[in-house]
Amino acid sequence: MAKSTPNIVLIMADQLAPHFTGAYGHGLVKTPHMSALAERGMRFDAAYCNAPLCAPSRFSFMSGQLVSRIAAYDNASEFPAAVPTFAHYLRSMGYRTCLSGKMHFVGPDQMHGFESRVTTDVYPSDYAWTPDWELPDERIDKWYHNMDSVREAGMAATTFQIDYDEEVAFAAKRQIFDYARERATPFCMVASFIHPHDPYVARPEWWNLYKPSEIDMPKFTLERSEQDPFSQRLMDGIEASTVEVSDDEVRNARHAYYANTSYFDSKVGELVATLEEAELLDNTIVIVTADHGDMLGERGLWYKMNFFEHSARVPLIMAGPGVVNGQAPNACSLVDILPTMVDIAATDGTEKPVMGQPIDGRSLLPLAAGDGDDVDEAIGEYCAEMTSHPVFMIRRGQHKFIHCDPDPPMLFDLGTDPDEKVNLAGDPAHADLVKSFAAEVAERWNSEAIRQDVIGTQKQRRAVHAAMEAGALTSWDYNPPRDASQEYVRNHMDWTVAAAKTRFPPLPE
Image 1 (cartoon, helix red, strand yellow):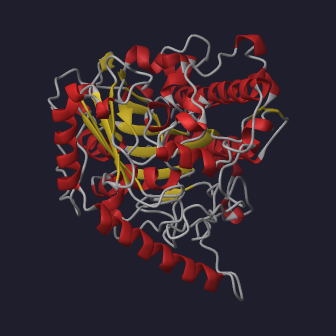
Image 2: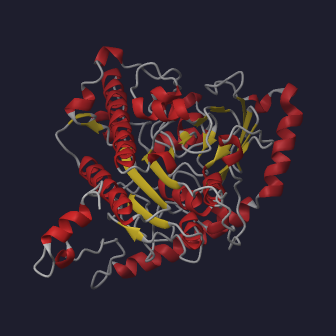
């Protein structure tokens, strides 16, 4: 007898490091809904983004391909419409597909395989945020991170981010009920929130979950002079080298981040509760993850844009039919989500589609089902602001290797040094391992060719953006379609029919 095809609901945070969640063992931060999913599902303990910046990470996540393969270099790189995504593949396998919330698509295609999109995006969809690797020290103050988010952290009644996430949750919950009312299964819903991304500003009810005296400070910090060259450039780029922040400001920023993490967790709870009310939870696989983490003052760094653990690691929790309870130690990454979703969609025997492009990930469904996995690896690439050359990461087993052409290499043993305090690249005892990783980097990537392609696309995009700013505005920002003449109750409808049609659970026939 064929199995029933599970629905998939993927809930994505923005800039959420697993280290700062109760679900991953933080003693203070309250994430009861993520913890509840972990208690009945699989928690992946070494999941990474493939690029520690919003748009590149999301394009890589949706396509199952590394950044350099699809030229998804920075937050103004276009995501080509011809790149297949998991939404395309699931649609071809009979799924309804919907996006509620942020995906930071850049370019005129604002759907990328989603059959419906029920909100606009929170960020612009044009080329305005293009870096310039030929002027790598130049700041674009309008959109580069600086220390204002730390200095101005605190409480507010609302912000644009709160407005946005409230809309995302409302639209996602309504769409889930629409699927239930229409019996439109299987479906894949992606609900993507912007919290706990900075600015670090929280509503009072979430702020007041925590006492200021309870907030832990960064465990390991470095002065600029003690940092590796890439971290020095990051400090300069976010102005941490020149703008001092007090202990109280650091504590406030972490306080608000913890509060907003709990706020995001509440949205996880709302969506799971909606699935239960819609009688869909038992046949839905719920996945919770993020696009990247946040340093939050660790190592003296903030935000993301590097391959240290707090920036590059992401939460990944999966629960639902066929998923056992446990913790998976294997290194994995967001490019693994596409093949995992395709495997989920094929559990009823549906034939898998032919992949339109090579996939860089592997399915995590065997790990989720409690089977073994010989692969223990995650690959990362960073080609955006605050550098002039590509940065590469290889995480394999307990070791992490980071390479950037102009910088000394970095090697960390995360088994013995989880805080990455000791760079082993200069240790003679690890010389063979460093040599092996360096040879692998040279074989995997042509760094100079990637660099020249990055610079070339930056020039193209700056030229197009300059032209689009002249004359009449042609916007790519997504405007969700809405036809008020067909909503709720209208004169061409029988209101009793509309009432019965939209009621869930329906009245007995």
